[in-house]
Image (cartoon, rainbow, N blue to C red; front, side):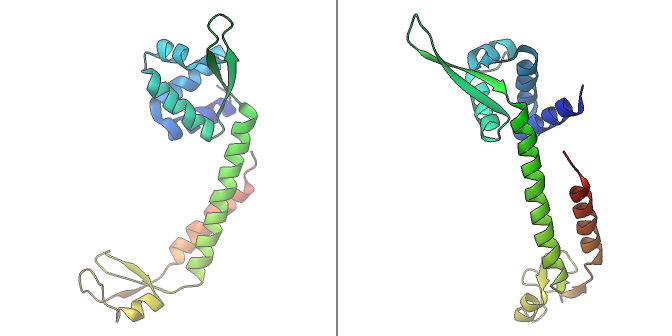
Length: 166
């Protein structure tokens, strides 16, 4: 299995669970398929297959084409994986995560934190002052929290994501 296929299966698992992986595998093996064909091949209910396909379409994993049956005049839809979009989707998700991590890092670096020793709350200095350094849940005295570990983890994750190229 190629790295790309492995990523695709992991993405399907995250988006739709085990049934999603089955659908992706079936589409990989057969190319484009109708939702009723997928349901029959995988012994899944058609509405379950359609729901998962719509989730995949929202996440740019699959695309759909509409066809008209010449005999009946009814429309039917064929679903297929769109590999180029999956890579763009993954890169977009990486960029969004990187942005959120950088924002969180900036927040952590620009605030001093106090927390309840029982783990009820974690507050900025300003919020702790408003509560007289007392936990609003249990009444315990809030204690200064050194957030160097959090900052170091965020910086490491940012370096990791920044160095990755898809």
